[in-house]
Every structure is written in C-alpha cells, then in structure tokens.
Image (cartoon, rainbow, N blue to C red; front, side, top):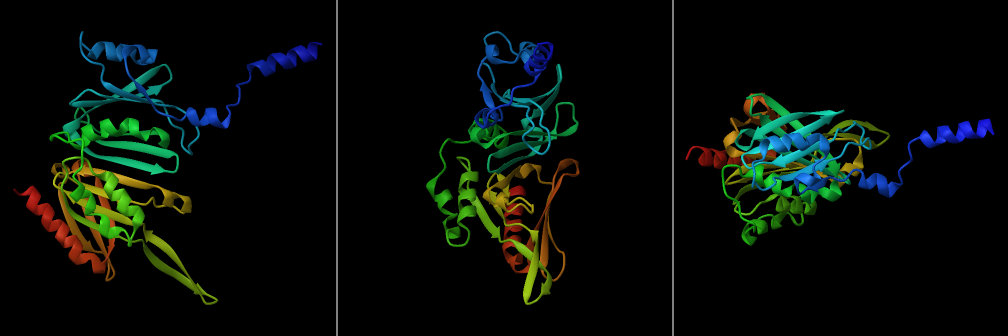
Length: 309
C-alpha cells in the first residue's frame, strides 16, 4: 500500500504527453482580437499604448514549443500602423522591439512542409539595428498576411487585387520550373508591376568520378529574382542536404528605397555574384552562371532607372 500510494503520487505529478493532434495544434499561431484575449503578461503593454476608443491593433501570438531543432520562445506581433511591435516572452517578463515600418530593411518568409517563420530586420525606434524571428506551423500562415502587406508597402498604397497581366508574366516558366512559376505568382501584392524576372536553376559542382559515376555537390540552390516598381523579391530553395526541403522555399522582400547598392561581379570564369547591400551592413549574395550576365545586367539597368528618377 505505501509503495502504491507513493507511485501514484509521483505519476500524478508527471506532465501529460500530448497526442500528435494536440502537439500539432500547440504549434499554431493564433490571432488576438481584443484586450480580453491578450495573455495577462502583455496586458499592461497594451493598456499603456491604447487610448480610449482606439481600435485594437491587428495582433498574432506565436507559441513556445520545442518541436523544432532550435527552441522557440513565445512571441506576439502587433500592427500599430506606423510601428510593428514584437514582444518576446522570457519567463514572467518580456522584451519589446518596436520597428517603425519605414525603417525595416527587409522581411523574410520561409516555409518548409509544416515549418514556417518570418524574419524582420531593420532599425528599431531606438535607432538600434535588430532582427526578430517568429516561428509557427504553416497551417497558420494566412494570419500574417496583413502584417506582411503593411511592411512591404509602408510608404505606398496597395490594392486588394493583382492585375491578371502581372500574374501572366510568370507563365513562361510553366515548362522550365512549374514550382517557381507559382512561387513568383504568389509573391505579388495588388498594385505591383513586374519589370524583370529571372530564374537561375540549381548550380552544381563536380566532386569526383568513381567507377564510371560522377558525383556533384550543390553550390547554389534554384532561385529567382523579381524586380517590381516597388521592391526586389528574391525567392530560393533552402540550402540544406535534406531533400524534403525542396517542398518549401524562402521569400525575401526588399523595398527598393532600402537598397544601398546592387552590383554584379565575376567569381570565376563560370560564375557571377549579385550583391545586394542594405543598411547596417546587411547583405545578400546570389550566384549565377556566367551565361546569365546579360539578364542580370538588364535587372541592374531597370533598377537604376527606378531609383534615379
């Protein structure tokens, strides 16, 4: 009897294991629609910013869970119009990052199977360069669309509909790369005009030939650059050995006004490097085959035309 009582007592204190369905739901982001829905730890923050009669800002909560390789912390992102607030929980307190939308250098959206994330990089309201990343289940991707739109067109109006002729500009990729054709189409927001598109296939390098079989390694994944009248959109496959990542992609959205320089250089006789320099030494580099030189120069020319007007 004493042993049984002790065993039952200890068992009762053990955390209950979640079912696969419950574990999946625990990774979902969820919208916060009113002050009443705000977790207690963040209530004082909203009370200090909201004035009487002000509509509750568009807000999404991302969970803390350990399904990913790297532990994720609970975060809350809120759209206050000209400012995007991100609150990151740490125990019984939280850290606040305020990003004025016109100070954001770029945003990155990544999705691979059920694993999604959004990264915001730019200057905070204190003038400090910072980066914030939110991770969540891909099922809840649509909750972030309004915030992504707010950031992407911080200084311009956007429309709810995309003109059909802009979408049709990606149709030439139907035979070349159907997946990237769709990636390009889904990257647009109403009011954008597509000025240049170029899709670079995966670049491989030969490692060795053994017993009649040649082995290669990937030095650059498939990627695509899209220049619009407002931004530069860069889409790529994830650089990883895990082949299942081919089912996902990474989208980087950069406002043209945030690009300090856009330049092309030669890496060797076979490769070119497109360098995109952003504020606070943030930088992107993309590899292209030497045969793409004319296409990339056309991209650079269109970019110069837009930014020198």
